[in-house]
Amino acid sequence: MRHFNYLLLSLFLLFFAACNTTENQVKTDLFKQIPPQSSYMFKVNKLQALQKTNPLIFDTYLDDTDKEFLRQSGLKLPFAIHILQQNSKIKGFIAIGNMPAIDSVFNGQTTQYEQFDVMQQSFNKKDYYATQINDATFISNKKLFIENIIRDRNDLGQFFNNPNFQKGIKSLDANADMNLISFLSKLKPDAFYKFDLKLKPADFGSWQFFDMVSLEEHIATGLTISETNPGLLQQTFGNIEPQPTTLLNYVPFAVDQSFVLTFDDFDKFLDNLSKSKEYAPNEAVTDKDILDGLTGVNFFRENHNKALVLHLTDVSNFTGEATEKIKEFNNYEIYKFKHSALIKNYFSIIFPDLNLKFYTVIENQVLLTENQAYLEKVLNDIQNHAVLSNSETFKALSAEIPSTSHLLIFKNKLDLKGQKYMMAQTYQIDKDNIFTNLILKNLSGKQHSNLVEQVVSVPLKDLPNAAPQLVYNHHSKYYNIIYQDDQNNLTVLDLTGKTLWQTPLKDQIIGRIHQVDLFRNRKLQYTF
Image 1 (tube, helix red, strand yellow):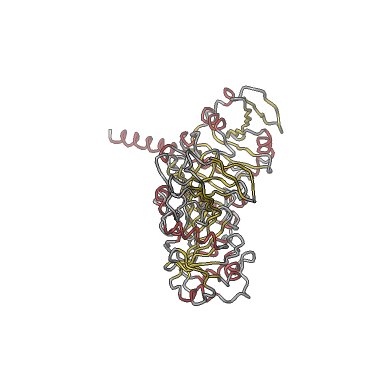
Image 2: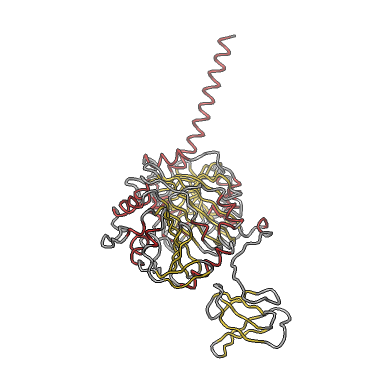
């Protein structure tokens, strides 16, 4: 009896090992079938990953009909979805997996390409194509992509034997709803949603490996890995410690995008950067003593306005270089800045060209802008707490990201297929790895409908007799503030609080004020 039990146990262990090997083999086969033209690879472990409103599946390439077809296709989990781009006009996907009953799904016209069957099926007025190679099923919304797969079948999975690529694969969690691999060297700069950041996707490394840890909250976390030599990001920050900063305390809530760099040694940061031919600063610019103790830089843009915040452990060197004081504004002193070439030399290599002419000091932060009016507008926002760090949405987002990072990329009101998102991506870097986190917060959903965010705050000199209104200036392409005071004067301000014009009226305005595109004496006319 004991021998019989031992035999049963041995057979069970052999059966379990065989099943486990098969399961691992299916996962491995997905990576052995990677088309060399892939831009992104999504490894779908659970069908809810293909929910209709999932921005992390890059809806630009995969629409709701595509997702529903793949959900119903009969592909066995897990399966892979590759996003490919032949050129600027031909974009699409290839799904790869195991599908035994392919004939029951693809029962339309069948053609031949290099002796392989190319099957067709229509679904919701869209055509899909499929073929089978070595027991793997390939499905695409482009017949051209299926033909390319057949033609290049011997090149599939060329990344698989790369030890660095395998390191990234091993970092993925098979229990996540979905995994994502970004082939950074294949991406174009617009893959970063047209950020002002001058870094190219390839500067970050060769591949990014993400686990979609929360599809409902749109959270992803993972590694960035280089194929051979470290990318620019790892080369620059690999031996530098990230720092916590309060840089976002001074970013207006209405900002379009923001980027934060931190480092514990500015000289080492510059030395690392100088090793790059493309991004090396000009050594002829030597007056960098004013930046002693610099531990963080934040670039942000609001409409056409650009600004830079410097975090210094000691601002005395910077303020000692102060030249002409312009004015005092809301208890802040505004100065002209004479070192614009210095800032441009060190930071325009990463951020867009900067021509900073004015600055003020707030504790250990130096806030620089290209024009005085925008500096005053930001100071108004800071004084009235209309800043990003006071946004409830941003607080919810920042709770999901690390408290320190070498690089933070922030995008406000990112538009993905009609949905608005607040996005943040962080990078923490050492000599061996780049740890990255990506999170999106939906600004369009019902959960945010009861939140009131302060976009702008402007002090009024007079007591309004009704609530001030924002009106769009079709001439300047910006909003103005218009109100009538208790003396019936009608006043128009820009968003910095500057009075554009004022005119007395005989009576109080009843109802809303409307703007029309009619000019008289070079001034916009308002109707009410």
